[in-house]
Image 1 (cartoon, helix red, strand yellow):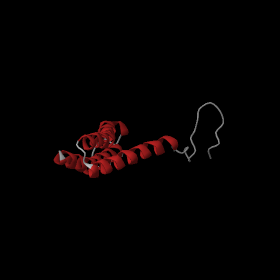
Image 2 (spheres, rainbow, N blue to C red; image 1 turned 90 degrees about the horizontal axis):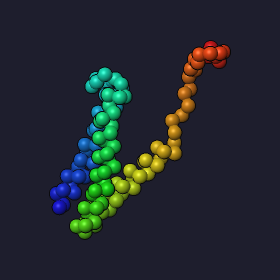
Image 3 (cartoon, rainbow, N blue to C red; image 1 turned 135 degrees about the vertical axis):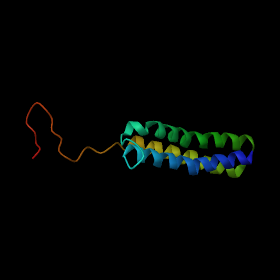
Image 4 (tube, helix red, strand yellow; image 1 turned 90 degrees about the vertical axis):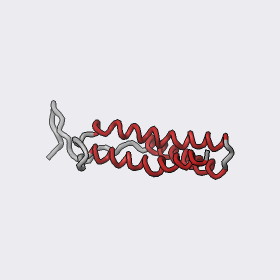
Length: 110
């Protein structure tokens, strides 16, 4: 069972960040795709599910097999993921800082 927990840690710490980087490269056209966020949607979705799911499954497996070190490792991972999700929910995107033209009336743009 320890080998399974080790593989989960490798995927969570190694593969998931690479998926996020790959998605960013695809979304912003840095050589790996059409440069549209929708093109990277599936990559970001997979990375998000793995990034949140692996620590939860790891805690359950570690707790049922009574491996205290792995419980701490994956428990910390669950806490980090929960804190990151909460931070994203409470910090919305900033308003645009450049002038945006709107139809139907005067504009304050120079």
